[in-house]
Image (cartoon, rainbow, N blue to C red; front, side, top):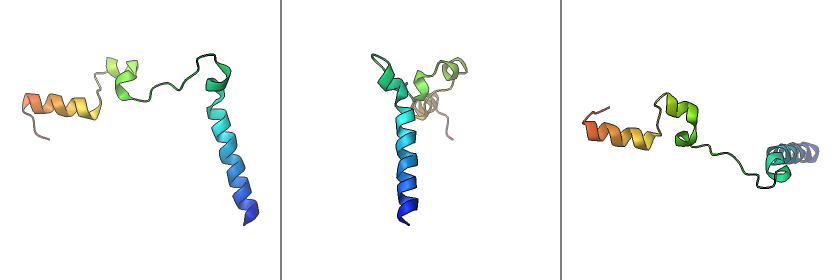
Amino acid sequence: MVQTLLLSVLIIAICVALLCVKIILRKNGQFSSQHVHDNPGLRKKGIHCVIDQDKEARKAGKAY
């Protein structure tokens, strides 16, 4: 039981460290934004976040 818990904590610690490599090694490192509106590929396809899509649908009078 204790070995499983320690192994799990070790795996989680390694994963967190690997996720932070970009932040640690760069001078002004930061995570890139995960928001839909910040993704240029989705913007090209005309995909917006759900809040913006809801506002547009209400403005156009469409009901889903």
